[in-house]
Image 1 (cartoon, rainbow, N blue to C red):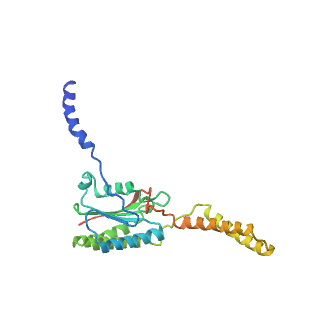
Image 2: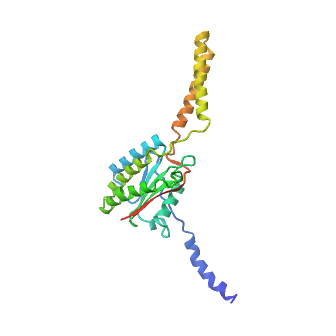
Image 3: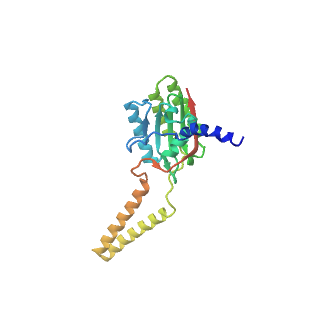
Length: 248
């Protein structure tokens, strides 16, 4: 028996080895000026423009990245053993949507051939918005998909997710603990220097120092207000904040 088992297992391993080498694949990230990847051909130019406009505003104003991805099927990405939920999670993490210190990314994934869609949320959402995400899926996305109007369903879904992300309960970006004290201290120092300069009538290097301090504060404030970078909404974020799934 000990001699027979290796003889039986060897051909089996030779057959299974190539299968194990296949890895799940993902669409490439969109360029920084776009917020969707349409490998299934569901998004027309007008809808694409609406997605970009909404997503760019949401990223710039709320620091919340929102991306839309359409695929022909899970099988087309070697993900036949994945559910739409599992693939959305894997894609979200593979792209790194959001940031580790502000993990509020949103992904809308549509698999045309599987007739399924998934809204995946970043970990910092904390499953508090599952109900709203399911409403967006059930009331805005799926009904249009059932009519065969994918462009409208996607556009309405983005509009609904944008509204959800701007809710009053949504936490805003938190600055480091030292930012507010440093800002207040810098402003007080600037005011004190201006008052002192006018009282003493000094000029020259003192005004140069004041200008340098003002420039320094300007760049600190600008960095804090526009902490999105040139790479769009990809900053090492991860999923885990719930979401919603739909089918049609």
